[in-house]
Amino acid sequence: MIFRNRIIKDTAILTVMQLILDTASLLLNVTITKRLGSSAMGIVSLTGSFMVLAGMVSNGNAFLCTSRLVSEERGKDKGNPDRVLKYAFMMCTVLSITTALILFLFGEKISIEFFHTVNMVKPLWFMALSLPVGAFSACFKGYFNAMRKVSLTARADVMEFVVKSVVITGLVFTLVNPNDAQVCELMTAGIVCGNLTSLIYFLIIFLRRKREYSGKASIGFRKYIRYAVPIMLGSCMTSALSSTNDALIPFTLKQYGNSFSEALSQFGIFEAIVIPALFFPSVILCSLSGIVVTESARENASGNKERIISITEKLIEGTLLFSIPVSAVMMRFGKEIGVLMGGGELAGKIITIIAPVVPFIYLEIILEALIKGLGLQGFSSLNYIAEYAVRISAVLVFVPHFGFYGIVISYYASNIIGNTSRLIKILRHTGAGVNIFRYIFLPVLCVFLTMEASELIMRTFRFYGTSLIQLIIFTLVWLAGYIFMVYGWNIQKRCA
Image 1 (cartoon, one colour):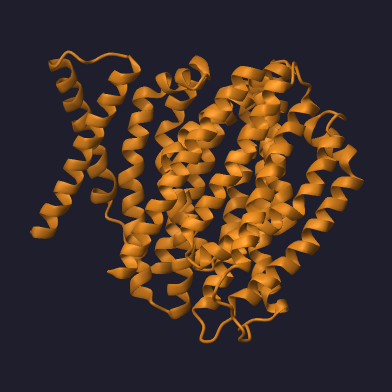
Image 2: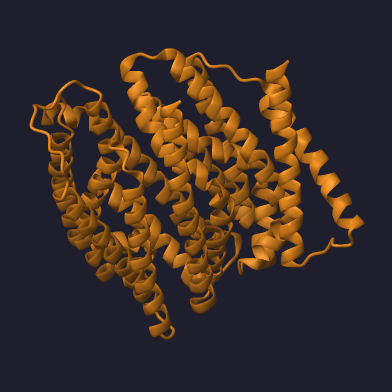
């Protein structure tokens, strides 16, 4: 019970903090889009995608590596998590310096191939200088996550975001008609300042700790590398494929007949409005996923199969019970959400169309956490390769013929195929089962009945309309009815 309460407490803390950050991030995207235009937002999205790739290569997904291996070290008698952290720093130093040199030496070629312009060389050099800072910050974040100091990592995330947002917003309102390079420079400057802030904070907390470990670690540096390399390669490959997909979208939209500016504008709307809107409600799952990695790794190391089955079944059920009503709300109010966020009718239409695939998207968050915690890195890498092969193929085939709707086809195909494969793998590996009626049919039925009942209630009280307040109240009444029906059913089944 104490173990369960701790997970609930940690998840609640992370959810609240992440909800605040995601809300602020949405507002920042809307501000940038309105100030600089959706075309500039497309450049920002491409820059962000490339920075994720460069950051992943330069730290080897240090957060996940450190979090998992430190968690396992904590479970060993007389283990030394601090030495594992030292190994992470050593590896990140080599990777970040090597990656920085590549950006310095091949900046012009990368600028032309990825951004389709020669003006991105200076932003890439600036980006190269920032890589060690981001790598070390990721190591600390993974370490404190494994030590279950979630409130500490949450505070660091808040400080990092605040500093990043202040810098970016200040520069956005300072520049007048900035070119692509200047837009990327302000984006990079904000991220660098944010990472530096969190690194300084983590360093101060680490040096002020009361407990220090003096024992010998259960693994050496070579063994750390052997464990970390599969995680690193899988993460880097996934990030590279994601960046390739992002770079192809503006190119294929041009083939459809759009100008480069129009292509960047539509890409910016998709990345800055549609995707954040779809993922915004998943904040609780994202918060939970980091804890799932550490706990499933610990239970797997101890061979507690029953506990792993229980965790797996509860996570899958909870994810579907949560994601199905979210999908329904987006299908019902996608148009209003798109307009409210500044993406116009196009964003609203795309949100509505993609909404049915939301349960698959949200399942990925939890299933990947389980896969990584159970050490199935080989499957994760192969599955991501297959998923992005489907997505990139769909982009190349359908976007030149159907334009923006080709992106929708790629999202449907890759998410359904990739996450069905993940689900089958997890069920086979753990021996867990899925109750189709309780996990899928029950929430779908409850969503439909409560939606109809909510509309009837709102019309009865003559409060049914399209204003923001009316939509919010309708959604709250709808979700309250859904929660009452679902949990009422579960309580009745337990009593029976």
